Length: 298
Image 1 (cartoon, rainbow, N blue to C red):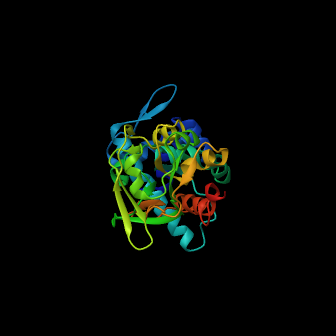
Image 2 (cartoon, rainbow, N blue to C red):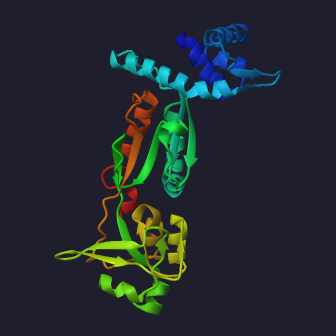
Image 3 (cartoon, one colour):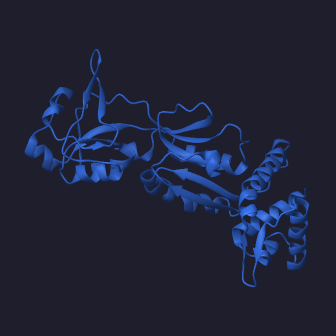
């Protein structure tokens, strides 16, 4: 199977235009069409639907695409291992990320990263649902959690510092708790499924079951409800740092820090060779977020 035929196929999948994809690889439209015909003949299936205006992938083409990209990634990694990888990474990087973190911190970084790698495209899926990287065909996922899945390779991007906070209006009306036990008398805003809060005490951890009149399944809604005085809650500093700067939220009970082992991770399947496009993406995020990230500079 010809590697350049695969490279052309991947470009066609992105551009949906044989002539454009061929031009990017210095091929005439006729030669590009001939290359795709040869690839389809070698596989014994039709990979693309052709029309006068554009092309689209067939079901077989869609199924074949991630495998073609894996082959190209393996070739690029092999070339890089012997010093031949001076060509800028190319293709499409498929990324999954939590919705809030993705909107607040990945999207602002995308312009800079894409400018560094003009041959790369990004497909970004924003969802708070944990996706299956292999089944979904993702190259890398950003996760905000404790890392327990041993089937994944992972690289830590940043600590996930979490704090208890409330709005000035709430504190004025209901007072400021000084000890975790006092939270039983307060309106605790909770994220569904995460009603157990654990704090580090002087001698032992203190665990409480948070209760209140409002809970939701969305982290940004938890934060915004807190800003609007519906109660006090736990939030990651990457989510509330701007509200803290503006005085819309205030940290509480700093003598009893939250017991948490969560962090921001970049994870990728251990069965998949780390492609150059994934490596440069993770390296970029590590440089941007490691140490004391900008959201913790108060």
